[in-house]
Amino acid sequence: TLALAQKDIKKGLAYSTMSQLGYMMVALGMGSYRTAVFHLITHAYSKALLFLGSGSIIHSMETILGYSPNKSQNMAFMGGLKKHIPITKIAFLVGTLSLCGIPPFACFWSKDEILNDSWFYSPIF
Image 1 (spheres, helix red, strand yellow):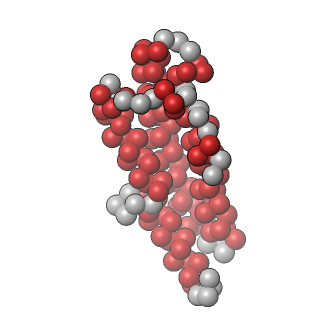
Image 2 (image 1 turned 90 degrees about the vertical axis):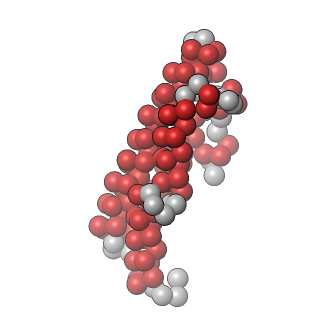
């Protein structure tokens, strides 16, 4: 929830990692080490895609607004960027959908495995 309150794009992405670490800790707490490592890997790839996309966004914001670290990373100024960087929009969408756990993307499979292991660990849970 801290990620939702951030205006800096990189801070928002960094705070969203905390929720994903919670999933990994649940898997480790159940003794499902392979699942925790699997989620770590899928999260790393998805988050790397998001950070690369945010770097592209920040770089294009500097060409639009001029060099200003406070403005180029502020999400309040990032409206209407899809006409300037359409490929980055698609890459950012793929990374976001993956971290949300939408079915054909990588993090869906690791989160599904965590839920599956939690069912075997405790069916009442």
